[in-house]
Image 1 (cartoon, rainbow, N blue to C red):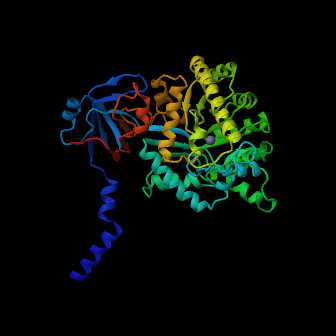
Image 2 (cartoon, rainbow, N blue to C red):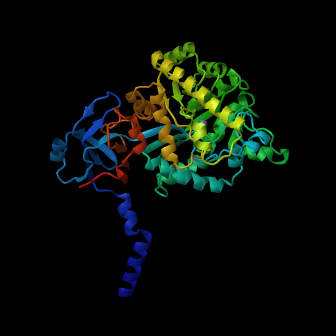
Image 3 (cartoon, rainbow, N blue to C red):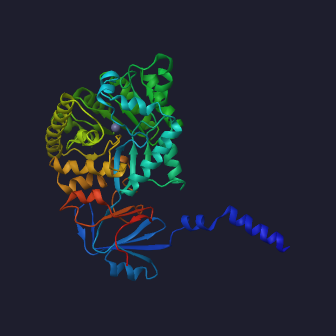
Length: 453
Ligand SMILES: [Zn+2]
C-alpha cells in the first residue's frame, strides 16, 4: 500500500512539477511602487506612484499609501526613484531574420534589387534554425522592455505564429506577438536571380504571391489557415488597386487588419484608396496623402531605422570597404537622415495618426536585438519629434494601431500588467528608453536591475 502511495506521489510530481505550478501562479496580488509613473496618453506624471496587479492584470493605479491600504497583504516591488511606463510596443519587426551585411564584392555580385544578398542567405536557412533564432531575438526584445511586437513578415510559412504560441504557452520567454505569416506581394518584387530549380520552393517559404483578385483573396485565406493576427502586403507599382482592395476586403471579412509596406507616393496612394489600416515606412508620403490618411483614420507606422549613420554603425566594425563604397554608404546615410527630419516635421504638422516600429532585421554588432530596436526610436527625437510623442508612438498610439487599445499601451485598470521602468526622466532624456531597468509582462517580473529593498 505504501509502495502504491509513493508511486502515486511520484507520478503526481512527474505530472505536476512544483516549479511549474509556482511559475504559472504568481502571487495573488502585487504592488509595484516607483518614484514616478508617466501616462503617455495625457503626459501627466504621478509622483510617487503605485500599480496594483492581480492575476496578470492592472487592478488599480494611484499613490502608494492609498493602494497599500487597499491591499495590505500584497507582495511589494519597490523600484525606488525610477519612472514607470507602459510596456513598449515595437509595431514593425522581424524576429526570424537577422541579416548580416555581406562584403562589398558579394553585394556587387549577388545584388537583389534593393536588398543586399544577406536577405537571400537568411531566407534559405532551415526553418528550424530560424525558429530558434526567433526565440533568442524575442527574449532579447522582451529584456529591453518590448512587451508586445508585431512581426511583419520574413518568418517562413508559420514561424512567427509558432513562436507566438510557444511564448503564450510559457515554453520560451518573449513579448506578445502579433504574427502576420507570409508577406503578400507581386511575384518578383523582392528576390531575383534565384536558381530556377529551387526558386519556387524558396519563394513559397517566404511569400504569398498576388496575381489577380482571386489569388489575392486566396493568399489572405492561406495565412488565416496558419492563424495569423494580421495581413502584411508589400505594395509597389506591380500591384493594382483592385488586387489590394480584394486583399483588404477579405482580411476585414476575417477581422484582420492590413499593414502595407509602401514607400513611394504612387504605392501609398494605392494603399490609401484601398482603405488599408496602416502604411508601413511611407517615406515618400506627400502632404496631401497625409491629409487623406488623417481623414480616413489610416495610421502611418514610421520606421526611422536608417537614421544616425545606421548603415555605417552595423557595417564598419566588421567590413573592409573600399573608399568609394565607404563614401557612397556614408552619403546614403546622410540623405536618409535629412529626409527623415523633413518627414517627421510634416507628419507632426498633418495630425495623421502615427506609431513607430524599428523594422529591425539587421545584425547589429555589440547590441542585442532589443537594444538595436530601442536605439531606432531615439532617432525620432533626433529627427525633431518631442519625447512625449516618441513615447506615444511606441505605447498608446501603437496599441490603437494594433487594435489592442483595450489590452495594452497604457497603465490603466483592466489592462495587462505590462510595465517597464527607467532610472531617469524619459521626457528629459529619451535615451533612457535604451536602458530599461525593469520589465514586467503579465504581472511577472522579467528583469529588475533596480534596488528592491
Ligand atoms: Zn519591415
